[in-house]
Structures are given as structure tokens and as C-alpha cells.
Image 1 (cartoon, one colour):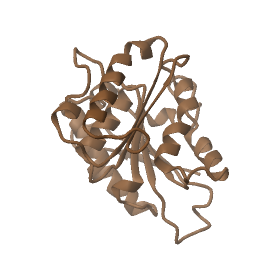
Image 2: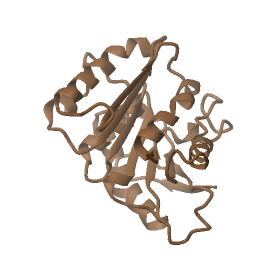
Image 3: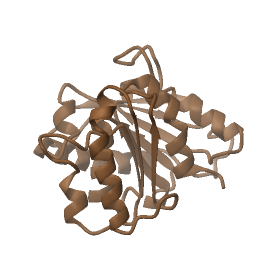
Image 4: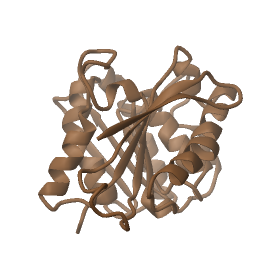
Length: 243
């Protein structure tokens, strides 16, 4: 089931809708609490009819499939719609700082107060693709006491001559788990250097492959909603897998 929370925003950013998917058993077990995954580009997360490219990640269906197979825990997914300011909001810019503040300081308390969540960082993830992958890493790195996991699918770490976000190189290791992936075709091939450097820097800082950092490469995948829909199960299991 998807609930729509309209016209949400905060200082410095436009208002937008937030879609919240709850697992099938949410209404049947009133004492149960759930981890939460926050996702960017909310229009593309659940329904092809709302997607900007006509293809959605169908995140609720994939989560339900993995839950039913006993592979992952039940979770709540909060999908934050983007606005015409997407590029600025998803970058390490003043508006990006305002967007991060909205997600961490306004939206998350609202979701925790509205739904039966497990509010701690070990049960709270944030994920996105392309620029959404960049802002996911920035949010977790800047708010490690709020978000304990970041999923970065085909992230734009190479931009304006910067090979990886300075926040990685210039700050100590936070207690977070980070998932990174990318394909080998088209734009993803151009972003390869940023992914390679980011993973290398994370390992140098003490992250451990398969423990608190994971990287997946598919040479045949490209920079598209369809590719991210295919790969979504990987961060879902890395963060919420029922091992």
C-alpha cells in the first residue's frame, strides 16, 4: 500500500510530495516496527505511470518479492519526489545542504512520528541513482547519527573536475554501510573513474568489502531506470537481508 504525503518541504527548497510504501503485513501486526529506506526521485520509484521516463524501479514489488522469499526483513519505503531544482538539490551545494537538512531533520522525524518505524541509524537507509546516488552518500556521511546506510546506484562522483566527493577524502570514517554499483556502458562508463576512486578511498579509510561497503559492476548495464530496477535487489539485501 502506498500513502501520499503532499506538499512537503523545508527552508531553501521547493515543496514536493512524498510517497510511502508499507509492507503487506503492516496493518496486521500493530506491535511490529520497521526499518525505513528513503529514496530520491520518488516519481520513478514505484509506478511507471508517474515515472519521468516511463519506467519505474517498482521498489515495492521487489521488496515484497524478497520478503515473501524470506530473503529480507519487512521495511517501509519513503520515496521523495524531485523538483525542477533536482541537480542543485542532489549536489554538494547550498541547496543540496538544504535538501539534506529537509530529509534528515524534517522528513525523517515526520515519518517516524507517522509510521511504526525503528528510528535508529542501523535501521535507516537512503538510496538513489545518478545524482541521487551522490546525495545519498552525502546524507549518510553528514548525518551518520540519522542514516546508517547509503545506496549509490550509478553515482555521479566525477563532476566538475572532482573525482570523488571531497567529504570522503577530507573526513574520518563514519559508522555507515555504503553500497555502490555501476554499469560499463554509455554514461556509466564515463562515471567509472569516480566509482573506482570512491571505493579505493573507502577501503583506505577502513571500510571492509562485504561488511560495511559493497561494490557491484555489470559491464552490460547502462545509466537507466531499467538497469537500476534490475540491480535494486542488491542494496536491498545488503542493507536488510535476512541472513
